[in-house]
Length: 328
Ligand code: KG4
Ligand code: ZN
Image (cartoon, rainbow, N blue to C red):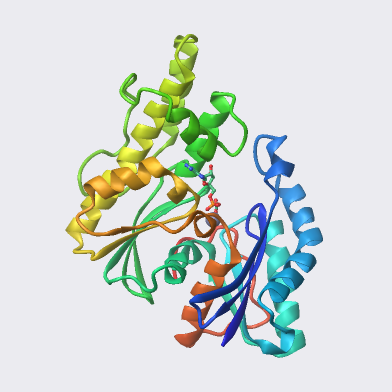
């Protein structure tokens, strides 16, 4: 059974063909990173326009690489939120057009659930209960999955997302967008104990996150110490961010008797985070390979397939929801 999935929630136009919700036949991603880098962040209107240009060729390439024809498809899955409204609509309208033209069932997918289901494509379904740490450019969520269809949100960020903090600190340090990979690279040359930055909500069992104070602390430090070594600042910021994420996730894994810890979203690509989690977690930590950490349509296919096999069908009235919270 083949799922065609489409992802266009932010600055990646992606289409994938996945067999039985687990075997990736193609996963084509057209990144707009270079387009937005000159502005230091994603420009929503430009993102939507670029999605319109890219979606057709990306779809065709996904079918070609999978050696599949329109008539081979069994399901259309598409990201319906959260994300940029104009960007989401491009993928959603395309998915509806395919579903209508081919008479295929349509399933709308929560982008954040998609990040978690990336794990189904690398190593298969996890041992339940599973703790999921979703760390992306726009979200920071800790959730407990009792099964593939039961999710309980334990905590989220009160302000900035983890990836957003990396991006903003990258900008403060004069690094190119996105800041995540560039801050990590610079941090490798720094002393992670040179500066002590603050940690928000440090009490054990408090699963709320906050990163805007940390970002401000970095800004104030750079103002007061113009001669500070940028690599030290990057290393100390990264240590503060990563330690908060790892300690809250490890505490939750123990408190809720999780049997696996799933890291998901773009920040899951961070090696320091993986190390901190491996040190602290009482259960095995799973980190997807890089191409499944960042936005891609294969993960949307995996989540869509799981929903479809559980009986979900969406109508052609399905709407985009830019502020959808994490749910299955
Ligand atoms: O999940 P994602 O690809 O897009 C969203 O759904 O937001 O995440 C993008 C975020 C960006 O903020 C980027 O800076 C961050 O993930 N990121 C990283 C790393 N690679 C990407 N953050 C820290 N370390 C990295 N190596
Ligand atoms: Zn994402």
